[in-house]
Length: 382
Image (cartoon, rainbow, N blue to C red; front, side, top):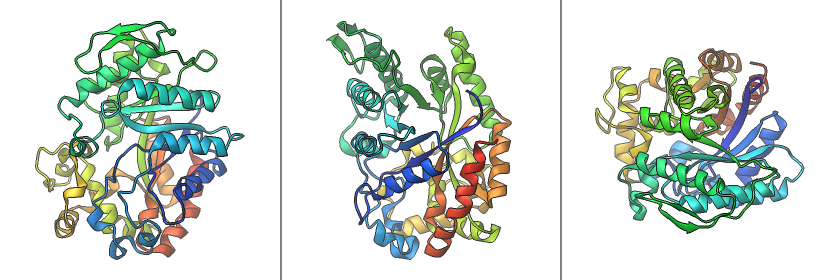
């Protein structure tokens, strides 16, 4: 991959204006700032405790988004956006869909359909998912990594079948003379981007994926070790290790001044995002994770069960230093310097989550749009 590129990730929350209002606004931002791609999440509900999504903590944004758990379905939305933006060249993807919550044959079909509709601009993000989007809905949550491995192998088997019946043994997704007859677009299937973190997931990424796009890696050095492990696994599998795109999914919190940014990072809603960080990240800052010293982070977080009083108690324990570790933050210059440090550790593609919009001050949230635009335009020059 030549040069540094970026995409913008939208959480797909429904708004009072219309279902597509917020995604379309972010799509316009992606187009205007020279983004390579536009992504949407795949959740059944929010990763933010609903008990905190009130006017007290969200400000006037609570009127725009009255229910943070009203999350829209990603493939439907991407098809809608693709139909309304036929002449833009942004690539479109889901970051990331659970390998187990949806049958992988259905995921393979959805991604291949979008790829055909967009003339080769679809991308498929895959991961193990989170407990909150599986267990409450009766989806088996045991052995999520094993299910992921079988899911991605099943998708590849169907795509590579050439339309011939496929039979494949699997403890989770067995195929019995399964036919997949959709064609690739000009001989190419959608790229698969994997959100993986543990050693086993990194090996699977190297064996099967086109890109590595972690979410909970919180330090540049950790990232460098991760991409090295992915490339080693790719080489062991006979693949070109340098063909795998080193990407990252991370929030950017910016503002006109450092004081504005620090005020945003100290807000209850933004500090709630630290609950998704694993316990070892908290321990580095001398604090035990409120959900336990062994808590794995976002994978096992079920924010819907956290009531208001408990959520406030949890967020009160978040140290400022942890907030600065888990996101890119600061003025435009400071954010670019931080991204450059990650670039020097191997990063080549940043998937941006606009954390600045969670500022409870509407004025300061809107004012952050200008420095955010400056950050996005300067990313391509790294």
